[in-house]
Image 1 (spheres, rainbow, N blue to C red):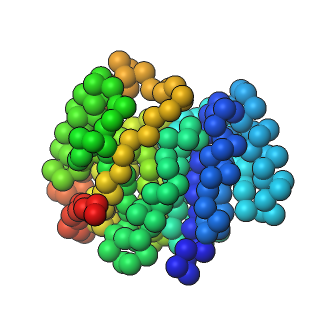
Image 2: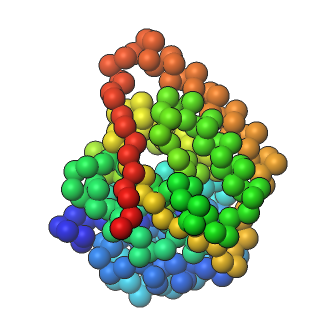
Length: 259
């Protein structure tokens, strides 16, 4: 447990045999449950994760999709498992070893202290934190940042593509997990939906981490696809604001300054 709260970590994984073992083994001991969602991998991802699960006395749980459904769908599967197990906070960490476990307390503490319902890593507010990020990726992130701001109606959003997040049980239980976008773009979709439901969102500054992993995102396809998703999200938000304002509560995204 972390400060008397149950914490679950969700690891969506698709063909991550090179990294999944290290990712699981690096999870801190205070994490109560690790949910590895094998999203139809065709390599040894599931086999490696299963061997570690057998040695974990139930701490590591394996969820399997027979077919690849996308990272958003994998995370929704993990979220459902966290709800069933009554995890106070549910964290998402990628299976490609890009997310530093040492940053976990920064994501957890605002929720533990009652200052936030959803925390998300922010690599884009500090130039030094973007070291290793290609200029093409920076451009894509900048473009989708502004589109997400417009879709969510919040100009404070900084790094909507960051998948390193934590969410409180109360906010997770309010989400319609059946309608979360199933592929890359789920993080933008979640920010819009959480804003509409009034969840308190806090951004946590942290550096980008890039190693030997190869991104599965094809930006020439990704940016137009997510742009269309955000247009739909924008129209949905306007519809809710006009016809069902009871669902709308003020939401402010704030940042945590690093010492």
